[in-house]
Image (cartoon, rainbow, N blue to C red; front, side, top):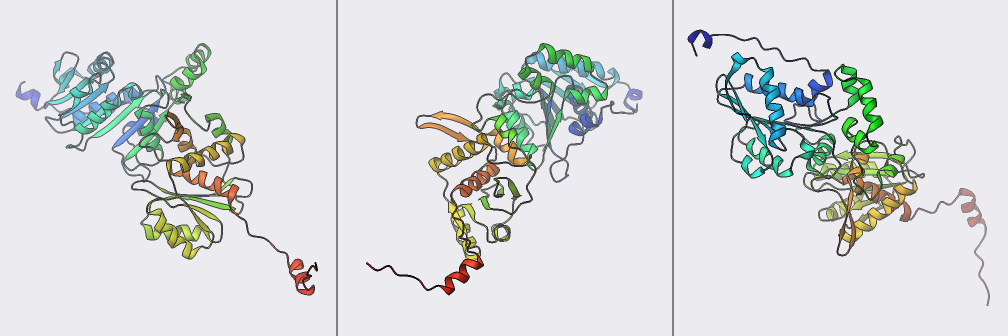
Length: 424
């Protein structure tokens, strides 16, 4: 390379991306509004997720420091090669220092972009990677995510995980739900065919043709980013959807409270007389502040509180402030009974709840067969605080003893008439 070439300056302009695409890939934020290190993007086919991430990874490499490494990881080498060819065609040759087969593009300054296969996750460990893209994440092995995440540790690099929706039983779906529910440093985005049509990068008649010729479940996953049921939800996805309703303004009849464990949330859900959710509390606070907030919310309303572990101490402190609080000890059998009762309420339509975290958690629940029978549970790594609080409220509404209401007229008559005693 000549001295003149080394002194050459370049003007970089980011390729045009439509706003939803640019926000998901270049400017993701978490629930607090802070920049998110991880962006999980569920996208229908041909919505621009790949081209957007190619632009992002190139920009991170080009504007980054010398001698850094960045990765594009796909399920198999053939898919990684597609991204390699598209990126190589888009980069001006004067910015490329070298090209190694279909596996690496090195920009000026030894800024390397690698294109890796996730077929053997064991081969992904060891390197220090500054940023990474996991392509077709719903079709990629979970061990690939573990390996890629480990390579970002020393550099504190950023990750973009992109892919079509493919059922619910995969790591990508679970992490998307965690990001959607507000996990710190995570951002969730959804791009569907309608977004691409509105942006002018996809024709509406092509989408309608796909709707006509593809099975409904396939079309919903590939073009609407809506997962199929997988047949594993104990409440029934249709039944869950039918029970969604706005938050009620009525007076609470009962409360159910699930207490935070480690990184979980403390969640309180109140039902009115009709079984509609009328109050919803979800927070993470120190125990003293948690107890104060719960006591203030409950007042004199009957409440059923998780008394498992540290919850037993919390229950005792709450009972000193609120005289209608009872505890519920979670065990495998007792939690199963609780969830079966909630399933009956949802499938019979005797409970309703607003959209948001409650629905997201309900939709992720699954059942499995064990040697002792069927067990309901949340997938590993997924919160179920809202589900437990709702189940506690439903159970308490069915079993809580309500105070006897005596009218003023009855009290007046009781004072006027002396009691009669039966003579034998």
